[in-house]
Length: 444
Image (tube, rainbow, N blue to C red; front, side, top):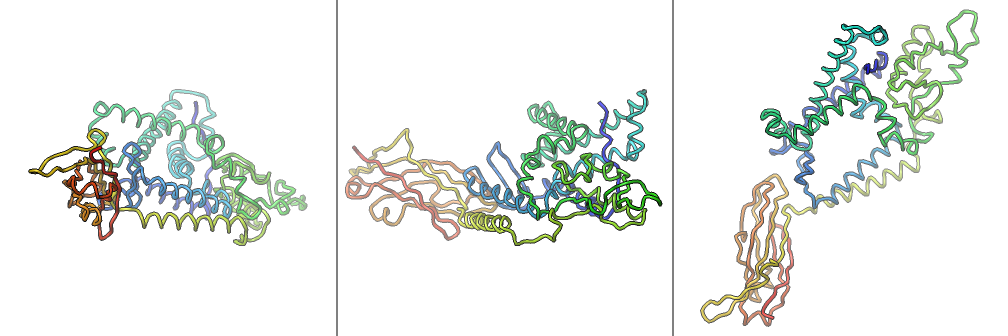
């Protein structure tokens, strides 16, 4: 299977900005797993241990409502951006496009030469030199796919653990090695052969984007009135439009569509055809922007649209919910339950009979700092005679420390008969008090 020659090269203002932006995005992708805030990665999505970190905030599996808000906000943001700017995400910031355009296409150009040269090379007769050169290209692709795979996995395990996998070797971590190699070969196949087909057949965004774009959305637009009828440059054929039918816009297109046929699902709004056409128009001394970014109704972008207002309101509502939930999120996850294996017991202190209930206490520091916590029964329960005997009456919980321990609630039998059986255990941390309720069981 031969490599894909890729689109023809093009220069222009959009591609200069696109190259700078995508280079920055690639650098961020590679270095982000190594950046830490208070000892934690900037982004960590450890599904195996149900441990998630986003820019200094630590979340766990029971924080699912917060993750729900984040997912909804992400989806709504995509809806809003698409309604305004069409598929600019696809052509400018999508990871698939970024790595193809800013990395793998560049590698192919360095090794195989410009578009015309490598196209001729792939069509030439097979020989040993050709096979060696293609094998070398594949080897470089595989190496960078290996780097991408390890960087990708670092977001889910942490960069330190990935480094240890590499240092210890595959035999010490066979399962991790299998996962990493599988991802490496999937990425290699994707970037070497599949490429933009991912956008056509797999990416869900490309499927439903037509429902998000309307006549007020920004698209790549070919000016038919000005360009048609197209034809080659000729002093005689003055009735022809500005399009000289050079097919330069088709050759530079990553998805190989002809934008002159109108807006198409495969267009990823990368602006390569715009720069290519502007370059041609300059050479033939005709006005630029025959192909340009334009709204479907050829009017300036307006914010006075119902769907934009709806998206903005929904984003505000869910963002407010996320901020409120984040502000009211307890720093210590506090759970308490009576031990089923030993619901209650009786002990004697001299001639006094004491009833005890064993409880399991679970404390988890959900912050990246040490917290001083106090655990006790409520003042009302204490006045009734209840006592909490626990190793966590007062303790320092280290950053993200997860502690499970047993404790006892006890009361004199003589006082139990007049006391209520609902016990409120209170946890005090950073001046705030949180509580959990357990039913106290006595002598039947």
